Image (tube, rainbow, N blue to C red; front, side, top):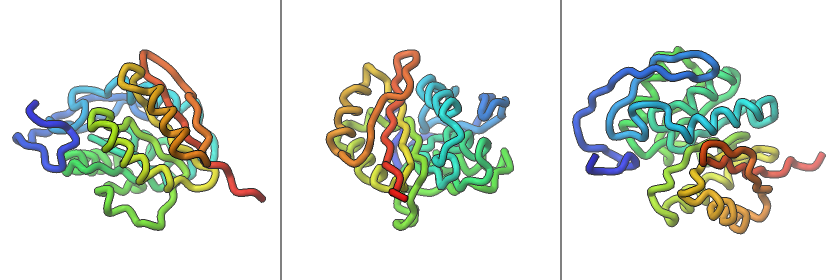
Length: 208
């Protein structure tokens, strides 16, 4: 592949293909294509994140709105929408092909609670009770930090962001950076599996 999956307009023919993955406890037949992240299968990092999210279910964060940063062909957003049909789920990506695939998969699954959008189309006033992402580490620290500076301040009171990052790609250093950059957030590692860490950044609830 001669370009990164985070290009706004991937080159190459758009040739969707079907794969089977398990989301929200059941097999799903979904569309992927070249030019997006992990088009052949559900990648290991996302698997680790989804297992961690399932274990942590049942809190205020699940009520929405929920944000998936860098949705790719949609697994994180789709899983959230399937598990929490009452919550509004936003799936954002700079990659137009990723947005097209996610929208097609939303239609396949008959989901009415997913909004697929480019990052600049998200209403400025919207706050999220849950942010969840397998962030694009390979864009480099400067771009990644810019993404997190844009979205972590959009957490609602009592909400949390959960990010999955491979240890060898800098999970520990990213956790330290988030802790230093956002002193009002409580930052911790809430899961670790198969070389991946799930980092949680939580905004305190408003006092009663």
